[in-house]
Length: 268
Length: 228
Image (tube, rainbow over all chains, first blue to last red; front, side, top):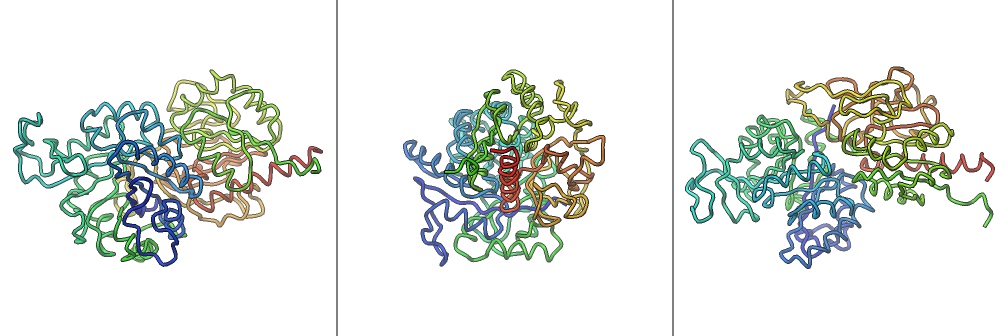
Protein backbone atom coordinates (compact mmCIF):
# COMPACT_ATOMS: atom_id res chain seq x y z
CA UNK A 1 0.00 0.00 0.00
CA UNK A 2 1.22 3.47 -0.85
CA UNK A 3 2.45 5.15 2.32
CA UNK A 4 1.51 8.62 3.48
CA UNK A 5 4.49 10.95 3.44
CA UNK A 6 5.89 13.10 6.23
CA UNK A 7 7.83 16.08 4.90
CA UNK A 8 9.95 18.61 6.77
CA UNK A 9 10.17 22.01 5.10
CA UNK A 10 13.37 24.05 5.40
CA UNK A 11 13.60 27.78 4.74
CA UNK A 12 16.83 28.81 3.07
CA UNK A 13 18.13 32.37 3.06
CA UNK A 14 21.32 33.13 1.18
CA UNK A 15 22.32 29.47 1.17
CA UNK A 16 21.74 28.91 4.90
CA UNK A 17 18.85 27.21 6.62
CA UNK A 18 17.07 29.60 8.92
CA UNK A 19 15.07 28.43 11.93
CA UNK A 20 17.14 25.24 12.15
CA UNK A 21 18.44 25.73 15.63
CA UNK A 22 18.00 23.25 18.36
CA UNK A 23 19.40 19.82 17.60
CA UNK A 24 22.12 18.71 19.91
CA UNK A 25 23.54 16.25 17.40
CA UNK A 26 24.00 18.76 14.61
CA UNK A 27 27.20 20.71 14.41
CA UNK A 28 25.99 23.39 12.04
CA UNK A 29 22.22 23.83 12.09
CA UNK A 30 22.41 26.28 9.21
CA UNK A 31 24.01 23.83 6.81
CA UNK A 32 21.35 22.54 4.40
CA UNK A 33 23.19 19.29 3.62
CA UNK A 34 23.72 18.46 7.26
CA UNK A 35 20.10 19.12 8.14
CA UNK A 36 18.95 17.12 5.12
CA UNK A 37 21.07 14.17 6.25
CA UNK A 38 19.60 14.48 9.75
CA UNK A 39 16.03 14.41 8.47
CA UNK A 40 16.84 11.56 6.12
CA UNK A 41 18.11 9.51 9.06
CA UNK A 42 14.95 10.46 10.99
CA UNK A 43 12.82 8.91 8.27
CA UNK A 44 11.65 11.99 6.37
CA UNK A 45 10.04 10.76 3.16
CA UNK A 46 10.87 13.83 1.19
CA UNK A 47 12.35 17.28 1.78
CA UNK A 48 11.11 20.70 0.74
CA UNK A 49 13.59 23.56 0.50
CA UNK A 50 12.04 26.97 0.25
CA UNK A 51 14.27 29.81 -0.90
CA UNK A 52 13.18 32.89 1.00
CA UNK A 53 16.10 34.98 -0.25
CA UNK A 54 14.87 38.42 -1.22
CA UNK A 55 17.63 39.45 -3.60
CA UNK A 56 18.17 37.77 -6.92
CA UNK A 57 21.97 37.74 -6.47
CA UNK A 58 21.74 35.51 -3.44
CA UNK A 59 19.26 33.29 -5.28
CA UNK A 60 22.06 31.76 -7.33
CA UNK A 61 23.40 30.22 -4.14
CA UNK A 62 20.25 28.09 -4.00
CA UNK A 63 21.55 26.14 -6.98
CA UNK A 64 24.69 25.23 -4.99
CA UNK A 65 22.51 24.22 -2.05
CA UNK A 66 20.45 21.88 -4.24
CA UNK A 67 23.59 20.50 -5.87
CA UNK A 68 25.16 19.69 -2.51
CA UNK A 69 22.07 18.29 -0.80
CA UNK A 70 21.23 16.04 -3.75
CA UNK A 71 24.76 14.62 -3.78
CA UNK A 72 24.45 13.53 -0.19
CA UNK A 73 20.83 12.71 0.47
CA UNK A 74 18.97 10.30 -1.76
CA UNK A 75 15.31 11.01 -1.15
CA UNK A 76 13.00 13.22 -3.22
CA UNK A 77 13.76 16.89 -3.03
CA UNK A 78 11.33 19.71 -3.81
CA UNK A 79 12.65 23.22 -4.27
CA UNK A 80 10.60 26.39 -4.36
CA UNK A 81 10.74 30.11 -3.91
CA UNK A 82 11.32 32.70 -6.60
CA UNK A 83 10.83 30.35 -9.55
CA UNK A 84 9.57 32.51 -12.41
CA UNK A 85 10.31 30.70 -15.65
CA UNK A 86 10.90 27.39 -17.39
CA UNK A 87 14.57 28.25 -17.25
CA UNK A 88 14.53 28.78 -13.48
CA UNK A 89 12.93 25.39 -13.14
CA UNK A 90 15.46 23.74 -15.43
CA UNK A 91 18.35 25.08 -13.34
CA UNK A 92 16.89 23.57 -10.17
CA UNK A 93 16.17 20.21 -11.82
CA UNK A 94 19.64 20.05 -13.31
CA UNK A 95 21.13 20.87 -9.92
CA UNK A 96 19.37 17.81 -8.49
CA UNK A 97 15.85 18.83 -7.47
CA UNK A 98 13.19 16.23 -8.26
CA UNK A 99 10.29 18.64 -8.13
CA UNK A 100 10.01 22.39 -8.26
CA UNK A 101 7.22 24.37 -6.71
CA UNK A 102 5.82 27.50 -8.23
CA UNK A 103 3.48 29.96 -6.59
CA UNK A 104 3.20 33.69 -7.38
CA UNK A 105 4.57 33.35 -10.91
CA UNK A 106 1.93 30.74 -11.73
CA UNK A 107 -0.84 33.05 -10.52
CA UNK A 108 0.57 35.87 -12.62
CA UNK A 109 0.83 33.58 -15.64
CA UNK A 110 -1.01 30.24 -15.38
CA UNK A 111 0.57 29.23 -18.68
CA UNK A 112 3.85 28.78 -16.81
CA UNK A 113 2.42 25.60 -15.27
CA UNK A 114 1.61 24.22 -18.71
CA UNK A 115 5.01 25.20 -20.13
CA UNK A 116 6.89 23.59 -17.24
CA UNK A 117 4.78 20.44 -17.36
CA UNK A 118 5.29 20.08 -21.09
CA UNK A 119 9.03 20.58 -20.74
CA UNK A 120 9.72 18.39 -17.70
CA UNK A 121 6.56 16.35 -17.05
CA UNK A 122 3.80 16.98 -14.51
CA UNK A 123 5.59 14.86 -11.92
CA UNK A 124 8.09 17.67 -11.28
CA UNK A 125 5.65 20.56 -11.22
CA UNK A 126 4.29 21.32 -7.77
CA UNK A 127 1.83 24.16 -7.37
CA UNK A 128 2.22 25.86 -4.01
CA UNK A 129 -0.93 27.68 -2.88
CA UNK A 130 -1.18 30.15 -0.01
CA UNK A 131 -4.83 30.04 0.96
CA UNK A 132 -6.96 32.11 3.31
CA UNK A 133 -10.63 32.01 4.18
CA UNK A 134 -12.37 34.86 2.39
CA UNK A 135 -12.68 37.75 4.79
CA UNK A 136 -12.69 40.62 2.36
CA UNK A 137 -14.27 39.66 -0.94
CA UNK A 138 -13.64 43.05 -2.46
CA UNK A 139 -10.18 43.20 -3.92
CA UNK A 140 -9.14 46.66 -4.98
CA UNK A 141 -9.84 47.25 -8.65
CA UNK A 142 -6.45 48.93 -8.82
CA UNK A 143 -4.90 45.50 -8.43
CA UNK A 144 -6.76 44.55 -11.57
CA UNK A 145 -8.24 41.41 -10.05
CA UNK A 146 -11.91 42.28 -9.64
CA UNK A 147 -13.59 40.65 -6.67
CA UNK A 148 -13.55 37.17 -5.19
CA UNK A 149 -16.50 35.11 -6.49
CA UNK A 150 -19.41 35.12 -4.03
CA UNK A 151 -19.41 31.32 -3.68
CA UNK A 152 -15.70 31.14 -2.85
CA UNK A 153 -14.83 30.09 0.68
CA UNK A 154 -11.10 30.48 0.28
CA UNK A 155 -8.98 32.85 -1.75
CA UNK A 156 -5.41 32.73 -3.01
CA UNK A 157 -2.67 35.04 -1.75
CA UNK A 158 0.68 35.54 -3.42
CA UNK A 159 4.08 37.04 -2.61
CA UNK A 160 4.56 35.09 0.59
CA UNK A 161 0.99 35.73 1.71
CA UNK A 162 1.25 39.49 1.45
CA UNK A 163 -0.90 40.04 -1.62
CA UNK A 164 -4.55 38.97 -1.90
CA UNK A 165 -5.94 37.92 -5.26
CA UNK A 166 -9.51 37.36 -6.40
CA UNK A 167 -8.81 33.71 -7.19
CA UNK A 168 -11.10 31.11 -5.65
CA UNK A 169 -8.67 28.57 -4.15
CA UNK A 170 -10.69 25.51 -5.17
CA UNK A 171 -11.09 26.69 -8.74
CA UNK A 172 -7.42 27.59 -8.90
CA UNK A 173 -6.47 24.11 -7.69
CA UNK A 174 -8.60 22.58 -10.42
CA UNK A 175 -7.32 24.89 -13.14
CA UNK A 176 -3.69 24.38 -12.14
CA UNK A 177 -3.96 20.60 -12.23
CA UNK A 178 -5.78 20.71 -15.57
CA UNK A 179 -2.84 22.76 -16.80
CA UNK A 180 -0.37 20.13 -15.67
CA UNK A 181 0.50 20.67 -12.01
CA UNK A 182 1.35 17.20 -10.68
CA UNK A 183 0.98 17.92 -7.00
CA UNK A 184 -0.48 20.64 -4.78
CA UNK A 185 1.22 22.05 -1.70
CA UNK A 186 -1.67 23.67 0.14
CA UNK A 187 -0.80 26.07 2.95
CA UNK A 188 -3.60 27.46 5.08
CA UNK A 189 -2.61 30.97 6.12
CA UNK A 190 -5.33 30.89 8.78
CA UNK A 191 -3.89 27.79 10.41
CA UNK A 192 -0.21 28.49 9.79
CA UNK A 193 1.70 29.08 13.01
CA UNK A 194 -1.36 28.50 15.19
CA UNK A 195 -0.45 24.89 16.09
CA UNK A 196 -4.15 24.08 16.36
CA UNK A 197 -4.22 21.67 13.45
CA UNK A 198 -4.36 21.80 9.67
CA UNK A 199 -7.40 23.31 7.91
CA UNK A 200 -8.94 19.93 7.17
CA UNK A 201 -12.05 21.33 5.56
CA UNK A 202 -9.96 23.19 3.01
CA UNK A 203 -7.75 20.15 2.44
CA UNK A 204 -10.59 17.71 1.89
CA UNK A 205 -12.47 20.05 -0.47
CA UNK A 206 -9.33 20.52 -2.55
CA UNK A 207 -8.37 16.86 -2.39
CA UNK A 208 -11.84 15.90 -3.65
CA UNK A 209 -11.59 18.44 -6.49
CA UNK A 210 -8.36 17.21 -8.04
CA UNK A 211 -6.78 13.93 -9.08
CA UNK A 212 -3.22 14.72 -8.02
CA UNK A 213 -1.61 14.30 -4.58
CA UNK A 214 -2.17 17.04 -1.99
CA UNK A 215 0.43 18.02 0.61
CA UNK A 216 -1.07 19.54 3.76
CA UNK A 217 0.76 22.53 5.19
CA UNK A 218 0.16 24.98 8.01
CA UNK A 219 -1.10 24.39 11.53
CA UNK A 220 0.58 21.23 12.82
CA UNK A 221 1.10 21.35 16.55
CA UNK A 222 0.39 17.85 17.85
CA UNK A 223 0.53 14.23 16.71
CA UNK A 224 -3.20 13.90 16.05
CA UNK A 225 -3.09 16.88 13.70
CA UNK A 226 -1.07 14.82 11.25
CA UNK A 227 -3.55 11.96 11.46
CA UNK A 228 -6.50 14.30 10.94
CA UNK A 229 -4.94 15.97 7.89
CA UNK A 230 -4.53 12.55 6.29
CA UNK A 231 -7.88 11.07 7.25
CA UNK A 232 -10.27 14.03 7.60
CA UNK A 233 -8.33 16.29 5.24
CA UNK A 234 -7.77 13.38 2.81
CA UNK A 235 -4.24 14.60 2.15
CA UNK A 236 -1.54 12.40 0.70
CA UNK A 237 1.30 13.96 2.63
CA UNK A 238 1.83 16.19 5.65
CA UNK A 239 4.37 18.96 5.87
CA UNK A 240 5.68 20.82 8.90
CA UNK A 241 8.53 23.22 9.52
CA UNK A 242 9.23 24.78 12.91
CA UNK A 243 7.62 21.93 14.80
CA UNK A 244 10.40 19.66 13.53
CA UNK A 245 13.16 22.26 13.55
CA UNK A 246 12.60 23.16 17.17
CA UNK A 247 12.43 19.49 18.06
CA UNK A 248 8.92 19.77 19.50
CA UNK A 249 8.08 16.63 17.59
CA UNK A 250 10.40 14.35 15.69
CA UNK A 251 9.65 12.92 12.26
CA UNK A 252 10.19 9.40 13.60
CA UNK A 253 7.69 10.07 16.38
CA UNK A 254 5.04 11.28 13.93
CA UNK A 255 5.55 8.21 11.77
CA UNK A 256 5.28 5.69 14.57
CA UNK A 257 2.16 7.47 15.87
CA UNK A 258 0.57 7.30 12.41
CA UNK A 259 1.54 3.63 12.07
CA UNK A 260 -0.10 2.84 15.42
CA UNK A 261 -3.30 4.42 14.18
CA UNK A 262 -3.30 2.32 11.05
CA UNK A 263 -1.87 4.79 8.55
CA UNK A 264 0.64 3.18 6.19
CA UNK A 265 4.03 4.82 6.59
CA UNK A 266 7.53 3.93 5.50
CA UNK A 267 9.57 2.51 8.32
CA UNK A 268 13.24 3.33 8.35
CA UNK B 1 48.46 -0.10 -10.50
CA UNK B 2 47.53 -3.57 -11.77
CA UNK B 3 45.23 -3.43 -14.72
CA UNK B 4 42.48 -5.48 -13.09
CA UNK B 5 41.95 -2.89 -10.38
CA UNK B 6 40.54 -0.31 -12.77
CA UNK B 7 37.04 0.85 -12.12
CA UNK B 8 34.38 -0.40 -14.52
CA UNK B 9 33.26 2.07 -17.14
CA UNK B 10 29.64 2.68 -16.24
CA UNK B 11 27.77 4.71 -18.83
CA UNK B 12 24.61 6.55 -17.84
CA UNK B 13 22.70 7.07 -21.08
CA UNK B 14 21.79 10.73 -21.35
CA UNK B 15 18.18 10.58 -22.46
CA UNK B 16 17.96 14.29 -21.63
CA UNK B 17 15.65 13.39 -18.77
CA UNK B 18 15.90 15.62 -15.75
CA UNK B 19 16.98 12.86 -13.38
CA UNK B 20 20.09 11.70 -15.23
CA UNK B 21 22.21 13.58 -12.71
CA UNK B 22 20.46 12.00 -9.73
CA UNK B 23 21.46 8.61 -11.11
CA UNK B 24 25.01 9.86 -11.60
CA UNK B 25 25.17 11.17 -8.03
CA UNK B 26 23.89 7.90 -6.58
CA UNK B 27 26.53 5.96 -8.53
CA UNK B 28 29.25 8.30 -7.30
CA UNK B 29 28.01 7.90 -3.77
CA UNK B 30 28.61 4.13 -3.89
CA UNK B 31 32.08 4.61 -5.35
CA UNK B 32 31.50 4.34 -9.10
CA UNK B 33 32.91 6.77 -11.61
CA UNK B 34 30.07 7.02 -14.15
CA UNK B 35 30.10 8.75 -17.50
CA UNK B 36 26.91 10.55 -18.51
CA UNK B 37 26.77 10.62 -22.26
CA UNK B 38 24.54 10.44 -25.29
CA UNK B 39 27.37 9.29 -27.54
CA UNK B 40 26.50 5.89 -29.10
CA UNK B 41 30.20 4.99 -29.43
CA UNK B 42 30.66 5.13 -25.66
CA UNK B 43 28.06 2.41 -25.22
CA UNK B 44 30.05 -0.06 -27.26
CA UNK B 45 33.02 0.20 -24.91
CA UNK B 46 31.03 0.37 -21.67
CA UNK B 47 31.33 -2.31 -18.97
CA UNK B 48 27.88 -1.52 -17.64
CA UNK B 49 25.04 0.76 -18.69
CA UNK B 50 22.24 2.55 -16.86
CA UNK B 51 19.24 3.75 -18.84
CA UNK B 52 17.35 6.32 -16.78
CA UNK B 53 14.13 7.94 -17.78
CA UNK B 54 11.46 10.29 -16.57
CA UNK B 55 8.74 11.94 -18.59
CA UNK B 56 6.95 9.96 -21.26
CA UNK B 57 7.92 6.81 -23.13
CA UNK B 58 7.69 8.74 -26.41
CA UNK B 59 10.12 11.40 -25.16
CA UNK B 60 12.63 8.73 -24.14
CA UNK B 61 12.16 6.73 -27.39
CA UNK B 62 12.46 9.91 -29.45
CA UNK B 63 15.71 10.77 -27.66
CA UNK B 64 17.07 7.25 -28.26
CA UNK B 65 16.00 7.26 -31.92
CA UNK B 66 17.21 10.72 -32.83
CA UNK B 67 20.51 10.34 -30.99
CA UNK B 68 21.19 7.03 -32.74
CA UNK B 69 21.13 5.19 -29.41
CA UNK B 70 18.35 2.64 -29.92
CA UNK B 71 20.48 0.04 -31.74
CA UNK B 72 23.58 0.50 -29.51
CA UNK B 73 21.34 0.06 -26.44
CA UNK B 74 19.91 -3.16 -27.90
CA UNK B 75 23.40 -4.36 -28.76
CA UNK B 76 24.58 -3.64 -25.24
CA UNK B 77 21.63 -5.54 -23.77
CA UNK B 78 22.65 -8.53 -25.89
CA UNK B 79 26.28 -8.31 -24.75
CA UNK B 80 25.53 -9.96 -21.40
CA UNK B 81 27.07 -7.09 -19.44
CA UNK B 82 25.16 -5.47 -16.56
CA UNK B 83 22.34 -3.26 -17.82
CA UNK B 84 20.04 -1.38 -15.42
CA UNK B 85 16.95 0.49 -16.60
CA UNK B 86 14.93 2.86 -14.46
CA UNK B 87 11.29 3.94 -14.58
CA UNK B 88 10.53 5.02 -18.16
CA UNK B 89 13.90 3.46 -19.02
CA UNK B 90 12.30 0.15 -18.02
CA UNK B 91 9.06 0.89 -19.85
CA UNK B 92 10.82 1.43 -23.19
CA UNK B 93 12.26 -2.11 -23.00
CA UNK B 94 8.76 -3.36 -23.84
CA UNK B 95 7.15 -3.63 -27.24
CA UNK B 96 4.61 -0.85 -26.94
CA UNK B 97 3.02 1.59 -24.53
CA UNK B 98 -0.49 2.95 -24.23
CA UNK B 99 1.16 6.24 -23.41
CA UNK B 100 2.70 6.84 -26.79
CA UNK B 101 2.82 6.23 -30.49
CA UNK B 102 6.41 5.08 -30.83
CA UNK B 103 7.38 1.42 -30.56
CA UNK B 104 9.53 0.42 -27.64
CA UNK B 105 12.88 -1.38 -27.90
CA UNK B 106 11.11 -4.74 -27.76
CA UNK B 107 13.71 -6.37 -25.53
CA UNK B 108 11.05 -7.71 -23.17
CA UNK B 109 7.79 -9.19 -24.46
CA UNK B 110 4.75 -7.35 -23.23
CA UNK B 111 3.35 -3.85 -23.11
CA UNK B 112 2.86 -0.83 -20.92
CA UNK B 113 -0.61 0.19 -19.74
CA UNK B 114 -2.19 3.07 -17.83
CA UNK B 115 -2.71 2.39 -14.13
CA UNK B 116 -6.50 2.08 -13.61
CA UNK B 117 -8.03 5.24 -12.17
CA UNK B 118 -10.92 5.74 -9.75
CA UNK B 119 -9.98 3.07 -7.20
CA UNK B 120 -10.17 3.56 -3.41
CA UNK B 121 -7.50 2.37 -1.02
CA UNK B 122 -7.96 0.67 2.37
CA UNK B 123 -8.44 4.04 4.07
CA UNK B 124 -11.21 4.90 1.61
CA UNK B 125 -9.10 7.56 -0.08
CA UNK B 126 -9.23 7.81 -3.84
CA UNK B 127 -6.09 6.44 -5.43
CA UNK B 128 -4.45 9.04 -7.54
CA UNK B 129 -2.57 8.63 -10.77
CA UNK B 130 0.39 9.16 -10.95
CA UNK B 131 1.28 6.56 -8.38
CA UNK B 132 3.63 8.81 -6.45
CA UNK B 133 5.40 8.07 -3.22
CA UNK B 134 6.89 5.22 -1.23
CA UNK B 135 5.37 1.80 -1.70
CA UNK B 136 6.20 -1.66 -0.42
CA UNK B 137 8.06 -3.95 -2.80
CA UNK B 138 7.75 -7.72 -2.74
CA UNK B 139 10.51 -9.60 -4.52
CA UNK B 140 9.39 -12.77 -6.25
CA UNK B 141 10.89 -16.09 -5.26
CA UNK B 142 13.24 -16.81 -2.40
CA UNK B 143 16.26 -14.70 -1.50
CA UNK B 144 18.58 -17.18 -3.22
CA UNK B 145 16.58 -17.01 -6.46
CA UNK B 146 16.74 -13.23 -6.57
CA UNK B 147 18.74 -11.34 -9.13
CA UNK B 148 22.05 -10.30 -7.50
CA UNK B 149 21.24 -6.63 -8.07
CA UNK B 150 18.52 -7.01 -5.41
CA UNK B 151 20.68 -8.98 -2.96
CA UNK B 152 20.57 -8.00 0.70
CA UNK B 153 17.43 -5.89 0.45
CA UNK B 154 14.79 -6.79 3.05
CA UNK B 155 11.57 -8.17 1.60
CA UNK B 156 8.85 -5.51 1.81
CA UNK B 157 11.24 -2.54 1.72
CA UNK B 158 9.75 0.74 0.58
CA UNK B 159 10.91 2.32 -2.66
CA UNK B 160 10.01 5.64 -4.26
CA UNK B 161 7.70 5.50 -7.29
CA UNK B 162 6.51 8.20 -9.67
CA UNK B 163 4.61 6.82 -12.66
CA UNK B 164 1.23 6.68 -14.36
CA UNK B 165 1.84 3.62 -16.53
CA UNK B 166 2.73 0.08 -15.56
CA UNK B 167 4.67 -2.64 -17.34
CA UNK B 168 2.82 -5.85 -18.12
CA UNK B 169 5.33 -8.53 -19.15
CA UNK B 170 3.94 -11.48 -21.13
CA UNK B 171 6.10 -13.91 -19.19
CA UNK B 172 5.58 -14.23 -15.46
CA UNK B 173 9.24 -15.24 -15.16
CA UNK B 174 10.35 -11.73 -16.15
CA UNK B 175 8.71 -10.19 -13.05
CA UNK B 176 11.36 -9.78 -10.35
CA UNK B 177 9.26 -7.76 -7.90
CA UNK B 178 5.77 -6.37 -7.49
CA UNK B 179 4.03 -3.64 -5.57
CA UNK B 180 0.35 -3.08 -4.92
CA UNK B 181 -1.57 0.02 -5.89
CA UNK B 182 -5.11 -1.26 -6.19
CA UNK B 183 -3.75 -3.58 -8.86
CA UNK B 184 -0.56 -5.55 -8.79
CA UNK B 185 2.15 -3.50 -10.41
CA UNK B 186 5.35 -4.93 -11.81
CA UNK B 187 8.01 -3.14 -9.72
CA UNK B 188 11.05 -4.78 -11.30
CA UNK B 189 12.00 -6.92 -14.26
CA UNK B 190 15.04 -9.17 -14.42
CA UNK B 191 16.21 -11.35 -17.26
CA UNK B 192 19.85 -12.29 -17.14
CA UNK B 193 21.94 -9.17 -17.44
CA UNK B 194 18.93 -6.94 -18.13
CA UNK B 195 17.33 -5.50 -15.01
CA UNK B 196 14.78 -2.74 -14.71
CA UNK B 197 13.04 -1.04 -11.83
CA UNK B 198 9.81 0.90 -12.02
CA UNK B 199 10.80 2.72 -8.82
CA UNK B 200 13.68 5.16 -8.51
CA UNK B 201 16.52 3.56 -6.52
CA UNK B 202 18.41 6.88 -6.65
CA UNK B 203 15.56 8.43 -4.63
CA UNK B 204 14.85 5.53 -2.30
CA UNK B 205 17.33 6.21 0.47
CA UNK B 206 19.60 3.42 1.72
CA UNK B 207 17.78 0.48 0.12
CA UNK B 208 18.01 2.29 -3.21
CA UNK B 209 21.71 2.96 -2.85
CA UNK B 210 22.14 -0.76 -2.09
CA UNK B 211 20.91 -1.50 -5.62
CA UNK B 212 23.56 0.79 -7.11
CA UNK B 213 26.17 -0.80 -4.85
CA UNK B 214 25.14 -4.26 -6.08
CA UNK B 215 25.15 -3.02 -9.65
CA UNK B 216 28.69 -1.66 -9.25
CA UNK B 217 29.74 -5.02 -7.83
CA UNK B 218 28.26 -6.81 -10.85
CA UNK B 219 30.03 -4.41 -13.18
CA UNK B 220 33.31 -4.97 -11.37
CA UNK B 221 32.84 -8.73 -11.45
CA UNK B 222 32.08 -8.80 -15.16
CA UNK B 223 35.29 -6.85 -15.71
CA UNK B 224 37.30 -9.55 -13.98
CA UNK B 225 35.49 -12.32 -15.85
CA UNK B 226 36.13 -10.75 -19.19
CA UNK B 227 39.86 -10.94 -18.43
CA UNK B 228 40.80 -7.32 -17.89
